[in-house]
Length: 97
Image (cartoon, rainbow, N blue to C red):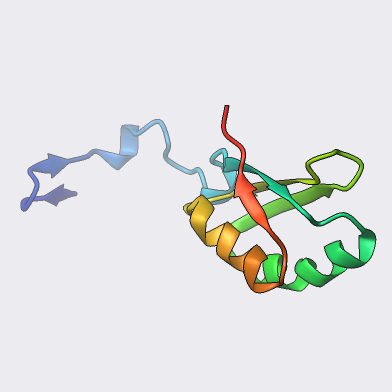
């Protein structure tokens, strides 16, 4: 296959990723500080995060002082996750290294 607009060519027969699927590629991990502190709060955000197909797995640690939301996803920006959480009525800010 050759993409002449960009001059890219590839031989898929010998490509190291041949036969892999998107869900086999490691997802991005995003970590957030929230005010999601109780089980009923987690139940409130569950349908919203569950409907987002790019989110593969998520959890909230309600025992942590920062009520950490951890999201494993493909091709989603942290701002999009923050928007989903704030639309549910909770605060959410990205934790960085």
